[in-house]
Image (tube, rainbow, N blue to C red; front, side, top):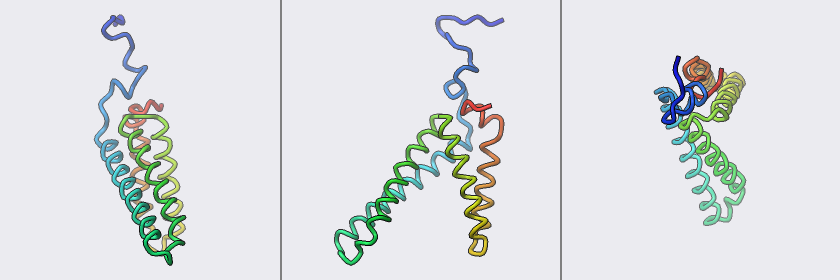
Length: 137
């Protein structure tokens, strides 16, 4: 039987994201989420500046603001995935399900690719070692 020492006061199963190595797939998902967030943020800023320079494009401002907000949220989720936060796993799971539904709705315009990608992500996020990394059982 292992006794807790002063050097290791907690058992490994109490803090899975701190004691387990991050799975490679989670690293890839976090990096892709961060790239998407940065692109959304930059695109939103670009749209906002275009609307400021060309008054006829003022109707782009709501899209710019929406894109900036989505970019910030994506960067926060990327950090959560990288850090092994349970809420990031939940959000990624929900976004994958939404992506599958949107893929089904837009099946005529190439939605099959979205269905496949989000299906793979959904499958991966529900693997036992990935769930354990995020503290989900």
